[in-house]
Image (cartoon, rainbow, N blue to C red):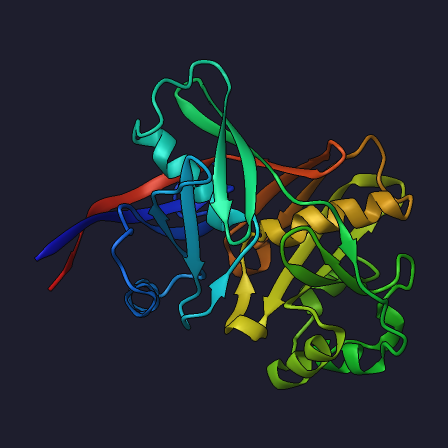
Length: 291
């Protein structure tokens, strides 16, 4: 009977049972795609990341949603896996910052890890910003989000932004409106498909304090209703805000997941590519048995 190391880590969390939970499976080299999809369904988390050997990087990562859809990009699925490895001593001493390479889909991206006061901190670079055409008609988008069109701001314009995965960036009037959003999955899915976007990132920030934002993320495209922390959306948001003149000092802190009771804090800085940083808390480690 095959035995694999597996467990859970709460990503972008300072304490257990907050942040965005991630299931991790080590030694997944011999698993088939179908097995990985079934294991992800068994764990039933937003994403499960499988760690395996790579000929191009230090580790290869593959991530699947609970519905079995493979997702790419360097977000909580990747950061959590590296924090997991660091917390269990799989990466050697991290008393000084060390850079590793990770293979995610077609990309090989760097991640920097360091242990501070006994906790592993990660900083991970995403790909360069790619922008798609802005939405010309926000009526269908507003209806899909259960909002009045007047609540959706047009500066910067709603449009897909991509630093590893394309998500629709939608600025609304304030944090209260973010929490009021009540999306209709089929309608939102149609809007996203028309925009060639995977998920929808609704956000708000005060123009007088652009270093902090409040957000929620919906991704019916991959069967993920709401996500507590989405690095692949936070990164392109930071880059998009900078490209449109809304970001000062090339840094932003994004609060996400609060509406779900899983408050997460994602920190992004541009170098000029987005760098996502955070910590995590391992809450479960055990063995996965496959017959």
